[in-house]
Length: 178
Image (cartoon, rainbow, N blue to C red; front, side):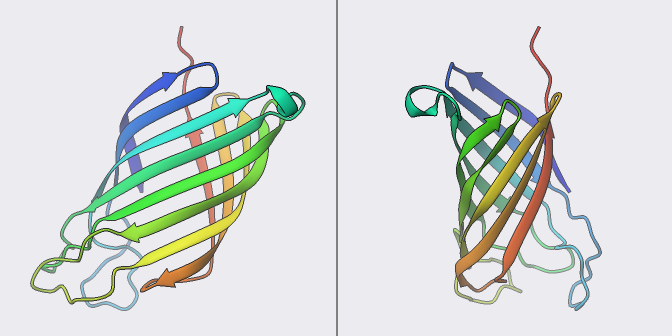
């Protein structure tokens, strides 16, 4: 489960920037050495920044152009029941698309994911740092103050991690300034 209670945003006519701090809680069943864990057994703090550029100038008067990006840095804690701390990781996500209605957009998206440093602790074993890239499609739709986002990626250039198709559905909400 991910929580992000702290965030600051800046808004200009065509560009928006948000910085925030969040955390992944160690939800799901985890027992050291178990083969049927559904959780990872550690907390992760994650500072991040998100940006959106939207223009309806030039050739984009009828279908506004959207470019979005996010940078995320994950700082993992020690794993429960072991002297093991996973290496931190960095992710860059991006999308390029068109706004088909005032509330619906569709486009191409991708990500670049890298382990930044080695795992540590007496239970850590030296391994190649994991990495993954992905490319796919994104569909977003707004309903009131909620934004629904569906993304599907195909992994490529994966090392030391799972490979396949990733599908994400997220819901974000906000409020208007008075």
